[in-house]
Image (tube, rainbow, N blue to C red; front, side, top):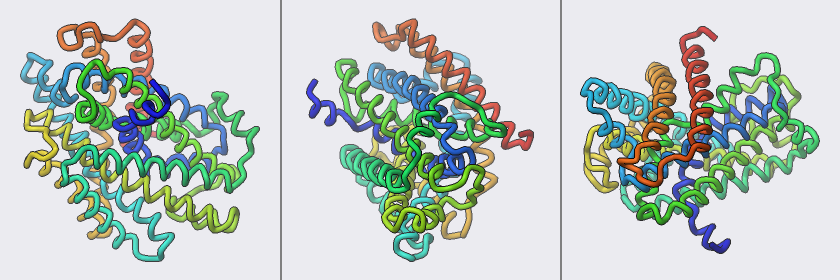
Length: 402
């Protein structure tokens, strides 16, 4: 496969990267860089490897079985009670969860535009929500994919440019890939991993590969797309951390990532502010588009509804998720209680999804010769243990134990 063909293969994986590099990731990476400097770059590298392992399995499941992950969960259990529990978890953690986070996605991107233009983030937020809705309503997968791939490219250029302009310490960057756990950093390590390995991306990937490719013959293109896109996503996250680490003395407390762009201007000039703001907008818009899409695929699959992007029920699900985000902005806040509920269910669901994936990837009835190798199973189990740790840490944090 030529380089041009490899570039043309980029698509569904880029949507996964677009989904996990949202305002939450920008915030977490910025806060980490400001507090701990370059020391936790290794965490992002690890999270990227773990994400590739799980996303490749999810995409392979979708491509070979021609089922979305929600549909696979619903149909693989004979026990009706277990089936109902799985449906509740999917709708609660993915459907409600994406709706709860949607306001943050939209307002995060809007803050980037507000920093550049001086126009209220509320105005930009509503406008972003409407544009995202129009894009999704077309039901044209290729158009949506191309738009998101373009925005990922904009993110990459913007955040890399801001990192270069700030003038990072290259030796400190290299040292940051040597694993270390600074005092008090366990919580942000959990955050960095948790914002990269995202439960709803497993649903998104299992479904969107079916929109792009036809079956097992396209597994090579899928893997190239998955690895390349997620690595690029990881590099973007790293550049955000590097920018914050270079811009602020270690130990700095960042309270508002939207103000980080403003704080960069006196340190690295107006272009650093511009690039970071554009990157923040792209991160918000891509997540505001992919979250409703993932929520719709997960919910319709779990309930056995038509998952066609132009079907009424599919549009109703993503429309509800997007509508919750826009309404939250107009009301001047975000649904905190729902976010807490979603975080709790996500903490429970992600380990279950990881275990189910490994189970499904060894089922010859649905995958035939494309089941997991021994190496894939070992890697999958290792990632699952980490996911369980992240889930437990997240739950303890939400419950106020940590």
